[in-house]
Length: 279
Image 1 (tube, rainbow, N blue to C red):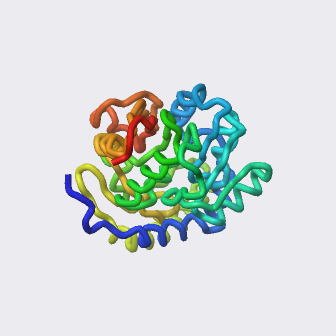
Image 2 (cartoon, rainbow, N blue to C red):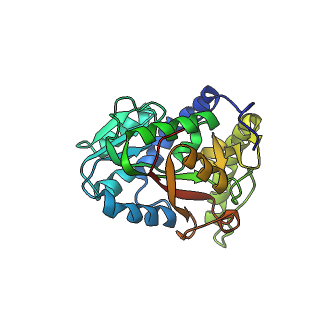
Image 3 (cartoon, rainbow, N blue to C red):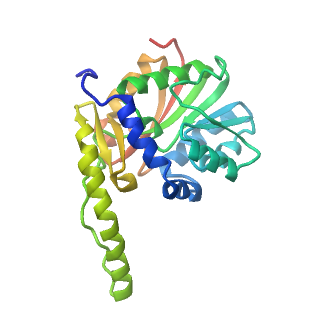
């Protein structure tokens, strides 16, 4: 595998992604989100719920607070964190009686070794940082997990259908001229920022067989994320002292076992258990 050499540095990705996630419109979108993102997330949370019941939980990348009630249904011993101040404030407004901290997953030093039974990093949040920092997150989460604790997270699939997206003209037809006109206006308004962001952010891209960094269509192509193959992600986890228990498709919620069976999934949900020392 080609090693991390010329990929954009963390500040490059941070500057772009933080800017997108702190925009008032983006914060409002995340505040309105409720429930599961997809069938894979639902299955993954149900899978870990029994063992984590009433035990300390860490919710990384809480955004506007969508996952807070999902995890509090498992345990009230809960703390949520996000690295964007605007999202932290939004989550606190949504859940005023819950502990929500402004914190970066690359530095969990405010938490003790072995503090949590379960850590979750939802909605592909781990993909917002580069290759080296991803390993830092895996190591930090490993440190704060109890022996045998689990890490649940989702990540964009390097060989999935979402890789290599570009802005495109796609208008849903309607026989109602008012609806069709409104949809056309919305599409026209989104295409300009999408192409502007795409033209700027695609310069940061880097493609390898096992992983890549690409401009993502979310937020009008306003973010840059990492896409990782199933094989590479399992290898990273094993290097960091985890054993992978489940890999689930975002599309179906069913377990996938190899690259071929994962190809239909835009992203994958990983359930990994802390079983050894991190390398």
